[in-house]
Length: 380
Image (cartoon, rainbow, N blue to C red):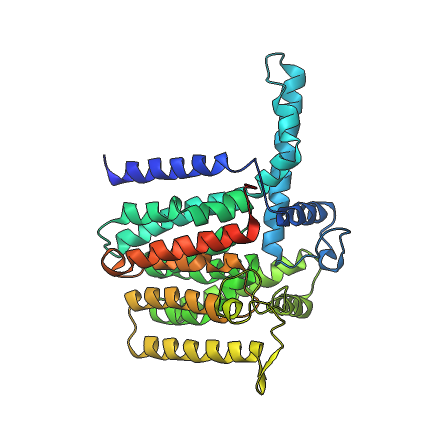
């Protein structure tokens, strides 16, 4: 069987497998997503100044809210269609009507962006592996698509890490694989979309800047940058925020929604401070937060300097993996879900099957255990 058919069957199987977990259970966070999406559909203007009784205030950038709104709108359309069919045709299975109007189904539809993104990431991993002349591109994609931790985040939990990671990986793909510069420049606005879905994408900006400088001509960078600016401010204008307010709103959320040393993430600070104090707690003359930023900055400078001195695609991919681990294990206020990019970038590192395969398996198990310990779904 040709690989083109094998990857298609793998993608279909991975999608159907995720649908199995779509309905039964979900995280309480998804209820916020439902409310925020419906609020956008009701009136998008002034959305970020609204408060929702019993739910969190919006803490995601606009593109994420668009996705929630589209998911809710899609379910409304399906329900309207089922109502019409149920009243028009006697043979229509009426049980589908209350099933699709249940709360679990509403939460299930909000999982769809993450599920589709999982499938997209699997395909991109396959395509990039082919580009890198990996000996086992299909196995590489399989290790991602059938990874329990990946499935758990998108299909059981209902979180959107996969959506951010899809655009991060697609931006990488556009910079590396196409030969035409007018396609490569699309890497910048695609990265902008990743940033506008979840702020965690912003962590990777220094590496992508270097990637663009090395892989895209200066005209393409300028065009891509201008397009990104239009997308960024356009998304905020749709909810009534002018450019200054948009920048202020975005950067106000970069510090995270918590001030504890670790927000359910099993990183260095979680093990050093198991009572989980605020990261403003002092260690000598500086706070834990300040120490975290210093350590992150030193590692980032070290990696970027080495990459500038000896740039290669393989080294870039390796450093993206290393940096994913660093921001998870050394940054404060991190959630357990934030280890997800490390799994994706690990699969693209050179010598995956000769050196890093065991690392990937151990990291996946660690990630899955941390996720389950935090959410405890299913309730067993």
